[in-house]
Length: 61
Image 1 (cartoon, rainbow, N blue to C red):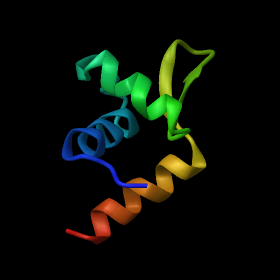
Image 2 (cartoon, one colour):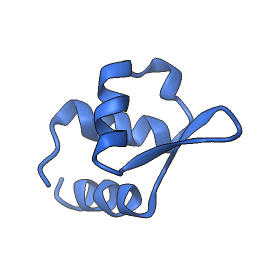
Image 3 (cartoon, one colour):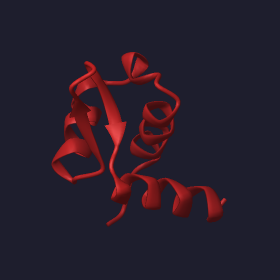
Image 4 (cartoon, rainbow, N blue to C red):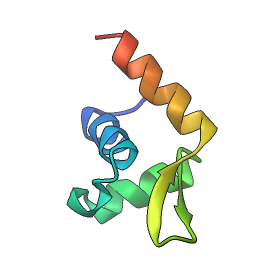
């Protein structure tokens, strides 16, 4: 699965609990791909697949 630069930055922001700063369309796109999910605590969290993709993006830099 290929992610755009914006999607990679959004994953990093979700990981840091800064999802309020992210584009809603990008968040929904990542949710559709199974990388993030809406948590009962009213915030976005990374799924296991999301953590994997985030780490791959960090390693490729």
